Image (cartoon, one colour):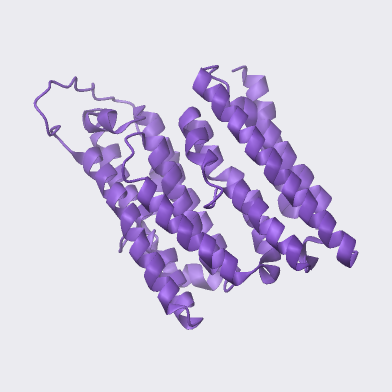
Length: 346
């Protein structure tokens, strides 16, 4: 893609995100979401492969439907209350429609079907933007309206997301699809705590973004897209693959890594809110996703493929690891001891 065009699309993404995050009026928030959707479409379909075109089409149709629901929800609320302010969403029907719209935007179960397909059809760098930056504006809207939303509905969506995200990722061999189901599972953790402690949702989102960015950038460096390629990638950059192992375990939420921090705080908060059964259930469901993270981690560091067919080993690269990956990996792995400081900031 032309560098100037690329710059325009990235600038439009930043603009759309900024407009949505900083707006108080529903129409401005909707405008930001639309700019975002239109800016990411060329980035998804830039390879001109039929699968990329299909992914862009699916993404456009889903996001257009979700944006229409956001508009419909805000208009219904304005009709009944005379308020266009985002924080003044008080009408029950509007809250219900908005929850569905944002769930569709984010890829929460049962509106998740588009997300793995779109991620599979996109390049790794675009997949990274879809998994992290594109989720920030809808997350902001959820954060601003959290006091008005239905706790029971969000808890059901969250538990279903954690279950299906873990369960459907078990049988995948394509790494982008595995990361898509991982994202759905993480969204379940963010949704369940949203009503009770919205700041924890944001903390979880930020840490998830850091860890996912590390994984995507590492995979992009080693040019790995499926498990069979990952099996032979250890020869290319052994130290990078070792760090990828730790980042994947952190993403799974194992102590003493960074990913354990949000899970620990969310379980603690749910227990305080007399929701111990929900906390137990979502913790058990996270074991499903732990399985496929462990499988990824095993494939990352394996030094001999477990079958007799000859594999072409890749040449070791002398290229130094980028500073961004080094910093992100450190944050993804070693942030747990700094949790008291993080809690004072949050």
